[in-house]
Length: 152
Image (cartoon, rainbow, N blue to C red; front, top):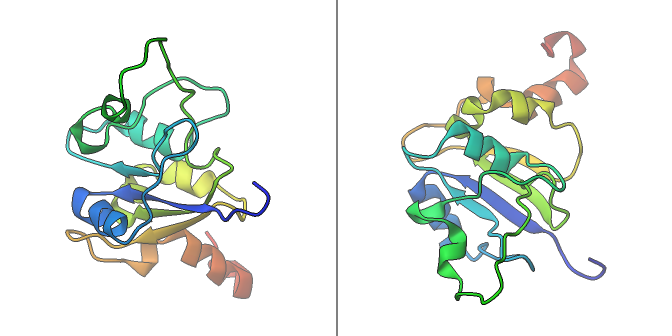
């Protein structure tokens, strides 16, 4: 990726993700995987966590943004094509993950386990759930740098 910037990935409800997509962050990588996930009522926790965390070489749940698999938007291929499912943390082209705080609460162990600098994980408010600084793992870690006793 020499000479190229990193992508911003976003995970959240339809309104939140749509706002960021209208702002221009939507992109597909060379394997035609999107850098966003629209979470709906039917979206399973396993799918959310797989999209967030993933693992190199794993095959699993694929994002179903907009209520259908994202590859259904692609032109039909003559050769069967199943891309390797990799979460945003495992992708080298993602530099920042914006995740709604309500969604981060649902997969808190996966969010808390991420300790690398890149991709940076930032919790954002959504339309239905205002931002709560007490629940933000990044803010808690930052406070721990200045007052280690508060980091629990």
